[in-house]
Image (cartoon, rainbow, N blue to C red; front, side):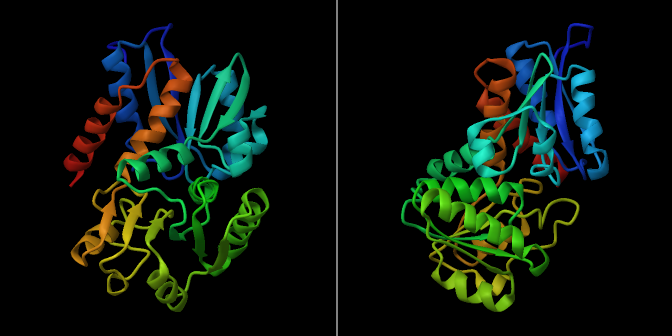
Length: 290
């Protein structure tokens, strides 16, 4: 982030609802400052009914780029001019780049997830993975895992079960993947977690301010499984705290936030992202919020 905002300052940001939990502004503005780039990153609360207007505003205000998160990752696609093939395959967008009024949607979640998994010494090929959730992030994660040859079970609440079934159908068609979708019930969770090597929370359950919630009861957790919670605020989450106490390996969501954010940063600026600065900024913010 530049020391002072002028008429030359390039604006990027994030659209979401809710927005207060996001740490992306702190992370990206620290990165801009580190590299001396005349950019500023701004959070925008956008209601679902106002999403079309927000995208039109991106053009009107010449906003260079936006991150897109809950609940807009899927719905925003219809308002863009172009889709990167990976984003189109995933069926969700988390990054928009504005090139002279032409808006292109990308998805950096899949890359961020895989880089984080591999950074923890895990190759997903052939692994039995249980994923809770079927939103935009789950679409990206499911695509990343299926593309790497993982075996995937997706659990989602009854109301959203068609979303999980749609992801499973897409992945079977595109990758001939071993994937199934089921309703998120205690019984299904109890059965499937016994067979899983990796549990992924791809929902927002446990995110600030609802930090005492968890998608998986503590009594179902134990040694022999890795728990990857994509929620990064708070860190650790209740899920990862209880998983660690039960003897499971854990992966916090902070690293995925940093890795996917670095890809977005590079698409907007053309500069190499200062990943270590971004990571330390997020970790500091998380500690300060405790």
